[in-house]
Image: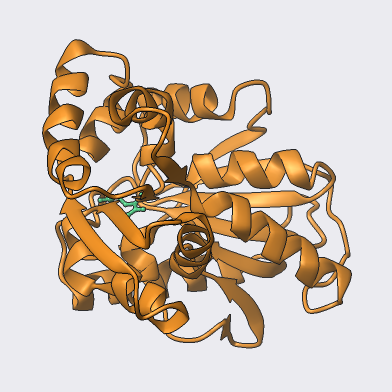
Length: 269
Ligand code: DGL
């Protein structure tokens, strides 16, 4: 690893796999001149089945990997890792998780004060969304549903497969039956499935993607100087802890027409 490829000041972002690209895509669209360094911890995916201590260890290593570059902010683009984030900076660098923005957006969206939360087992067990929502509005009823099979389906690129639809239908049954009017896509892999989930739950249930509020928060912090406005070359450099052309293919598919400029191996164990 070497920070010698010309970025003066980039935004670091990581996930266990391709899910963070859903956040990166929103960031890239909103901030087209920024440089990004994306880390996919593919060697240790999934995070959602791991204990808080293990995830905390990964979080620390991933942030430290990104801080070896000239980064001006770090985005934890993983809900499972966000559940163990403690504080809003790391060694003086602003740190952004995806739980707070999702909770805030859900509270604003829910008219009937009944919010469903889809997430990994780690995210659901942590109760992080429930706590974050109740800090804003203690009257909101939360219905949590862990969906452990969805991450592998997205990593596999099977979002449109009939099998995936059946699995999603099964996971969505309890929140729908309990009358939620808002559903948090509480794993950064799930926005890839958003069109199908919307079709399955119907148009009256609002789907929340944390990336939207996260983008607003970052833009606000760039405007008020909490995050420096120094720009790099406007590139996206991707690092992964395991190799694999399939990851590249799915990552680029999620990013659509936004180019991913380089792929390199990150030696994190
Ligand atoms: N994309 C991640 C999340 O938001 C992690 C999925 C996983 O590794 O289990 O939770």
